[in-house]
Every structure is written in structure tokens, then in C-alpha cells.
Length: 379
Image (cartoon, rainbow, N blue to C red):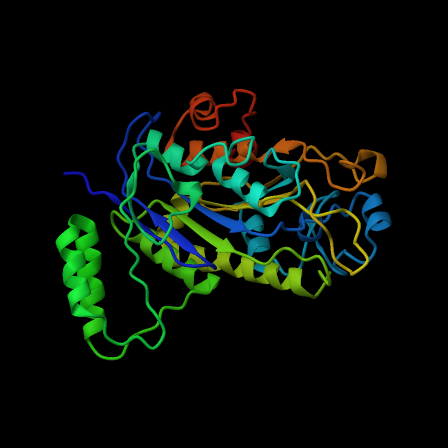
């Protein structure tokens, strides 16, 4: 009997874990793992990975460039707060994709986040996510232990939902409620309920840390287990800096440090499974090239994607750079996205699940025009 995959989803900052492998429709049996870090609010890609070799960067945003970016190549640098990620770049286990975006040019967080999770061109046009559909075709499925499984990992099968919340100051659950849940659930959900009830009945409650760093460690430890989940989704919110975004220091740089440490915690917790893993960031859109009147940036278009993991063989910075001259900007305000980020997602699916690129773009994204960038990222 094939075990069914589990999901664990926690309120934002959030973590969702998914499934046990079942092979099918793949080029060869691949036991790869995918971790998606959703950066909600719109990350400023020009601040994270500044194109220091483009003179227009300093003309367009004098106050929004870190004073000491680390140089990657003649065109690009990286914010100094990405210390761990920079080490991964040096050790050929990380890559960067710049001037990229999902195919959404609006300014709405809700629409942009929906497109980033669904992989569709039109917001709210489907009730499944690109990663969930890929899991369907790779025969990776499961049950959801969550209040609401993220759209990103929703596929064709319906989920049974159960949420084993740990609520502050709650020391003993109502045994009658647990008994009722046991009567209506079986299999893997029953195992989770038994663990919950045993832990809750034995002394003071142990509150679960739900900050992104703790969740990253939890994700890595779970995915390292024998027959553990192969998919995880982490959420880091608050990138919507319309004021006081910061440059060398400030709110956005603080988020860079947090993201950098999430990458590090994942690698440490995954241990040997890091070699079989690809971690990628997503964000609903970038931010304007020029700062606004309150030392922040507004909703934009192009941004950057950060990828890391042992499935990468050689580090690279992938970009078809459009330039930052005013004439080259999208609507005269935004970095133009020249790479459809769905091509990056397709490459990650190909690397981790073994699905063929043509199959992915036709069946998962339903867009045969999506380019193959696998070799640029994975070698």
C-alpha cells in the first residue's frame, strides 16, 4: 500500500510540507526535493542583486544601493547581507536569475500572488497551483494537515484537512474532541492525532516556534527523514516597503538577512538531502527603479530569483539584461522582465521530479512558448 503525502501548514510566516514519492510520467526515478520560499510583498531585486556595472543604476537610485555590495561579475553584485548565500555561490550550489517575473504586469498583491502560485497568465483563472499540478503528474500526492493548503501545492485531488494547532497557554486539549476526530479520520491523519494527544497529555505544552528560521529548520528535518516530504513551501512576508526601504541597513536589508539565514538553516537541517534539493524564491512582482518621496519604492515589474541546493552543479547569474536607462524601463518606471519566471520553475521541476520540459510547459503551465533554461541553472 502506498503511503500518502502529508502537508503541514502554519499561519504566516508559514510552512507547508508535502508528500511521499510515487513514480510515473518521469524520464527516470528522481528523488529530488523542491522548496519554495514565497517572498510576499514584492522584493526589490535591484537592491538584493544590484547591477553595479550599469551606470544608470546610480543615476536612477542614488540612495538605494548598498554601500559595499559584494561583486559577482562585471555587471552584478550582491547585497552584503547575503553572506551565507554568497558562500553557496562560491561553492557552486546557488544561482541567480535577474530581470525576471511571472507573467503579471499589474500592481495588485492579491492578483500577483495568485499568478505566482497558480502559474497562470490570468489571476484567479484556476484553483490549482503550478507545483501541485507538477506533483500530480509526477504521482506525488497527499493529505493536508493545515487550515488551508497553499494554492501553490493544490492539485487535482481533494485534500482532507486537519489542523493540529499549538495555541499559547493551552495545556490540555479536550479529550472528547480528540476522540471525535479519531472516529472520523484514519491512516496518516490518525498517526498525527495520536502524536498530538500523547504530547499534549504529558505535562506543560511545548509551544511551537513559528518564525521563518524555526520553520526552515523544521522543513529540513522533516524532508531529511526516510520517506519524508519532498516538497516544502515557506512564506516570508512584509517586503512591501513603500517607505524607508533602506539600503545598507533598514527594513529590506533586514529581510535579506532573514532570507539568507533561511537558506542556511535549510542546508544545515537537510544534511545529506541537500544534495537532492533545489530551493527557489518567488515574489509577486518587483519594485520601482526610482525611490518615491518617502524613501521607499512602489509596486513594480521585474525582480530577481534566488536559487540554491545540491542539484545545482555550477553557480551562475542568468540574465538577459534590459538596462536601466529611462527608455528601457517598463512603463518608464520598472525593471523590464526579460525572463518568464515560469521557465525557472519548469527547470526546477525538471531537475527534482524528472519530468520532461516539453511535458511541463504543455501540461503544467499550458504554455508552449516557455523557454527551457535548465542548462543555464543546473548545467
